Image (tube, rainbow, N blue to C red; front, side, top):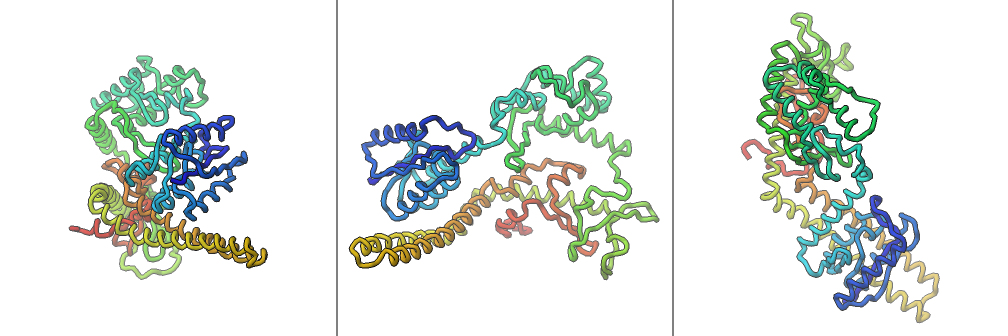
Amino acid sequence: MICVSYTRSIANCYGMETPKNAIGVQNESISSFLKGRGWKLAAKYSDRKLERENENAFLQMKQDGMGRKFECVVFSSLFYCGKTLTSATDLLGHIFYPAGIHFAVADDGFCSRDVSPEEVRSYIEKVRHEYRALNSSKNTSRYNIKTIYKKYGYIRVGEEELEIDPEPAEVVREIFQLSQSGKSMKDIAEILNDRGVESCMAYRRRKTGINYKYGSNGWNASGISGILENRVYIGEWKRKINGKTEVHSCPPIINIETFETTRTAILNRDLAKGKRQKYSGRSLLTRKIVDMETDWPLHVYVLPRDKSNVFRFRYPAPVVRTYEKLYLSCEAVEQDTKRLLLEEADKARLAKELLHGEGTSEKEKRMRPLKEVAGSLFSQMMGWEKKMVPLRTELDQGLIEATEFEHRKQSILDHITELDSRLKDYIDELGIVEKTFSEKNPWLQHYLSMPLFEVLTPEIVREYVGMVKVFRFETVYLVPLQKEWFERLPKSWFDTGG
């Protein structure tokens, strides 16, 4: 087997510290790996410049691999492979490995020659996960004491875990018990303050030794409300990672039945007191609702005859529309929006079930032509690469001048570059198909994380309503967030009765 190695002076992962003599450390690891297998190196590629953007040797290695000049490339770690891990995994997973060029990672004792294609994909995904964790901005404060007690009732362990903190967890349970017994949030705050129970912020100040300038030392209704509405206490830890909201599991402090019955009791008390009524002249959907045919925004007006709120065009209207109806009740729109949101969550649950059945065959069906084109482009690139050898021979034998050699060489490189650009587009499209038919589909993730609710709230609207469109003041349509990822799934999955 013709083996080569690749090393790099700077890690492609910002979350890693680069050791002194990094290339020497990598070479030692690679040498030990090769010795254990009885392999010898045919060539070494190394990006030695202390510049993160430097990847000349990486690109040369890529070009030589496509020219079939070696059969396996060995790295110390994929975190020292190319200027970004994405460029590395795309090259290995989508170009080299499918073409029969293997790769090995000495530090992990991994070689693609030893395992199945599924195990190769799993390994690459595992490395990507490690890369995201190391590159996370939050990773820099993983062991920072400020973050350990950030979630009241829990102790944060590393980046991915929460453990129950016994002392405040008992307070959380008592708050839910008091609420279930009929106590208002203000009453609960007074009970805790009278007993001298530390508030969330006071507890955090004591445990961390940091004198935060914000937050109250005592309990108040707002703080109690924050606990009673937080689903982390039933084991649903909502996190924002790279701008995307994800729900992670954690140990529950109370059970879901207690949480839901408490929320229902609060809602019933609020309704009995006349709370949660619509603001006069305003709706939860203000600035998120438009006319379907014109995309003009709809505004809230109060009907004089019964003081009810309705959506209509602003007065005077931008252009006269000849709709039979002139407005639609705000209450009706909000009820329809609630129904449509719950239906969106139902679609997400259905899609999750279908992913592992029909989704597998549908994914393969969509990926097959993309892989065929990608393979064809790769073959064409290798065809052009092979033309370089006889061209060099002609120059060495004096059959062509240097100027003609350079001209023809540049023509070959231009073709390779153009094909490489097209190949990357197909690789990107393959990645999109893979993501569409997985639980990483952004639309799927988003609406699977939506909590069940009885009343439409500003928080629900903000987090889960993209836009509401009204057709002629008759029918309400929801435009979900991450709509483009929903539309990539088969329409037949969501047909009525399908």
